[in-house]
Length: 296
Image (cartoon, rainbow, N blue to C red):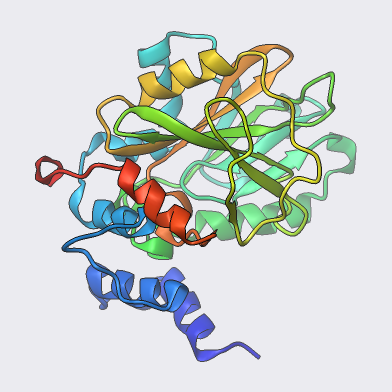
């Protein structure tokens, strides 16, 4: 049986609590997650500053950057071509997908949310019914209501298909998520297997690719640390070019068969509800992020 807090969160996510002002909801949710009040006047932790950015940083280009379709155009404008994964098609509805157009392996994802992902490694074995249920559910959801992140509010929900990618050496796909504070990379986390939250693994690393002494509480950690990417320095440079001029940006990249590819951009990781152990690292990361009234 779901608790009253879970029921309230579900109602909010589905948009039934639209009458609740954003700041009121954000304060409620922060206290629910962290068991303390949110200080928006003098934010100190990383997660507090994420909530401040939600409410005060309203750069209109941000919505284009988190739209997985439009983001590729932004990346091409900064880096030039060759870094984005090829798009095979874009549709407004699952029922409009041209299956004959798609190769044997591909990825389907929604452009406007986190989680609307279907990985197809063999088209002949794809459970289209399950894929349709997942994708259509995501298309009907406005991701803004998840955490009141304004950047998602007016994105037109669409489906895009991309080329299936994996490293031929490892047979898997590591995701390198660079945390950029005021245009500078301070750390990153590596993740693998994110299509299944229960088995996915995550680890934080510094700029020497040494494991950092903290972790997220909602994911398993690596049993064996991943290998440092061959193009690690190039990845840092790319992340800093894409994040220049923004207070915070997480830049997600892949290294596949010796080449760097862009994945996605995120302004508020975990919607600012990222629980970290030990907690002091929430404060340390908060010190890395310098806020300014010029962002308002």
